[in-house]
Image 1 (cartoon, rainbow, N blue to C red):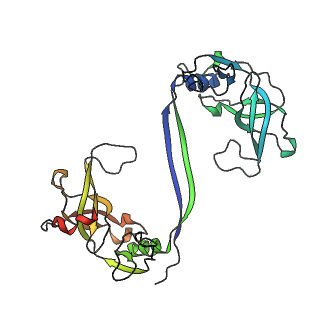
Image 2 (cartoon, rainbow, N blue to C red):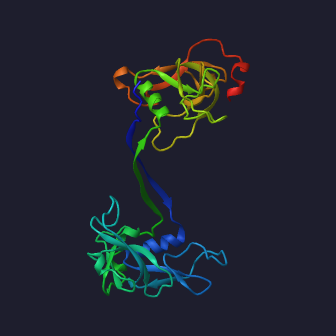
Image 3 (tube, rainbow, N blue to C red):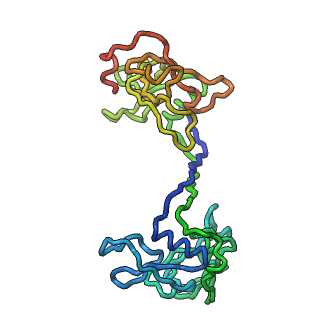
Length: 319
């Protein structure tokens, strides 16, 4: 069997929505009206952005201080090829900028045109976004020179203080499967379930591992397994969540395939949640063949076979 490693691009993404609390809310509300706000700590220093709690007294920060929208670069790093989602789509610098009136530096982008125009100690000022919504992007970037922006509370587009923000989180990468994952995924694309073991005396792992976790020997021997098995443990999902494909309540269970030594997690459908139990015999419900790919999702779910329950002794060492 050809077993060159499979690979595929993966894109993990979600929008993270959170409440910001009174301190960060004050900072973000200030940005919306072209105002940068710091917090004075018990040591007298002005921190930007303001910390939610004083690092010495552990008390909430309540002494807010306006700082300038101009400042001095204290360190920087040039970005010759920006990634998607970074502040600018052409070369720029990430810099730590100590704003006038602040004692700490703020990380932001500087649009200087060339790395030759960047230097530690240079003066920069904020370029504000045209449409400000109350997040850090309200400062589009910093640019060289002095600025004279003043707070613009009269044109604050928001009536209420900022209380929530939504941050998109993205991670794109190419995943290369191991040799064992590759033959397992190729098997699924053919409607087969392949496990792996060290030798005829070894335990059968599905999905297969690269080596036996008990003695480290390679699990080089492939084992084809049936698509029937036994529910070892389960839970009933009653809580809805974003992106959920099945309306609760439904059953998530560990299924020990016949001939395997380790169970894997899958759905149990075509039965009421109250009917599921340890020892229940189940079989895979495959998608139509034309929908198969290199994924365990080829199996839509497992469903009861109607066979008598397995005896506890047959799976008690596989929980």
